[in-house]
Length: 483
Image 1 (tube, rainbow, N blue to C red):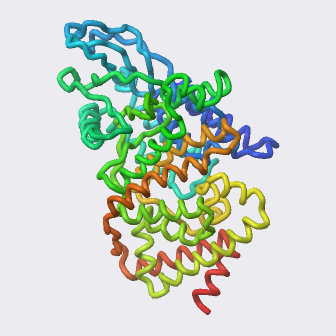
Image 2: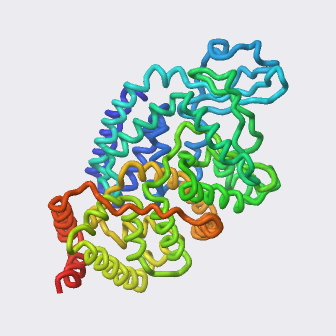
Image 3: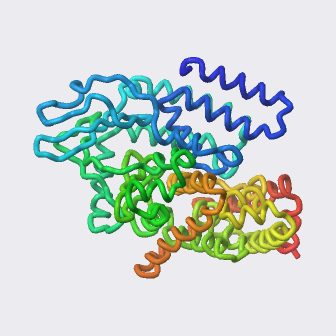
């Protein structure tokens, strides 16, 4: 499938395009999903990135699809080429887990410690460069059928390519593990596996073996062997809801209080332990702290307020822009009409959201269930009328947040859409409690790389984009700005 996957994908997408299918967007997404899954390797890695976006899985994703985070096909390799048998008293010849880039084997050191040996797949080393070129072509064709929104697919692919090249550098991953081990050395909630650096090499990481099911293991069993809570309690004796809150809360807390964030907290990288503890594994990807931790806190707080019952979507727009695209925001504010622009946008969107949530049951349901990113793009900023584009530093961070949201979405879908909002609220409360105790650094940036003329051009561009994509919102904003 790998060799002709591109041509097969094009044929399937074109067939859908000329069909009479009512919801073609879902069919495009499903086709892209199954094609990438069957192609394996780096294609599954990119698919995992797509699946962390709830909009990609919305309307069709089930626990079965989320098994893409659980296991991928195993690859034959000769262990003796990668590890010295003399370092081990016991070493299993078959992998106990397989990911898109690596396979894991269980062993025991001569000193008695049980370890997991992570080995980079030979096929990844051999074909990564050519596969990334093929994937770039797939992204281009997929972009035609699934147009850009807040995220530019070309830039997203460039970031994915960068992260892939970093992820096969195991020296960097070992450094990442040591960084997070230091952060969590006194934690009562989070475990980071110890790394045995003296037994590692360019393509091998030897680390502490952590016993316990991954969140992906349990999600794939929902409905087959019971509900999520019962499955987890039977295996670990822990409260799954508390553990998920810790995972999400720590992602938010580290974004506000540390220099780096665990960059890939998808279901397969969260191990559930006894005593309501969790372990994070796989540190090939980490994200830098946000451009402004203060702006990130304000964004999180506005999100939390809406989940708690506030209808101030205007505030959410402002904090979203300031957090994830500060350069654009500061450029617009530099114009004489810039502050009026954001005030006008906030007022118009608040007015719209109240009307929509009153007369449109679908929008109201989305808000109540907690899917604010869906509400944001579907009802608040329809078709990305504000022309918002994320900078790459904050895109990496948002991708990490979305990996966690993917877990919550899968759980929510399996439990009848009753858990999402509460889990997000609890996770945010976890991080907000940290902020109340430790405070938040004042690091908002108010400068921009745009010149004054460029700032005016940006303002005009945004107003033009509004006029073309959302005439009602455009008129509402202009009435306030120019009256």
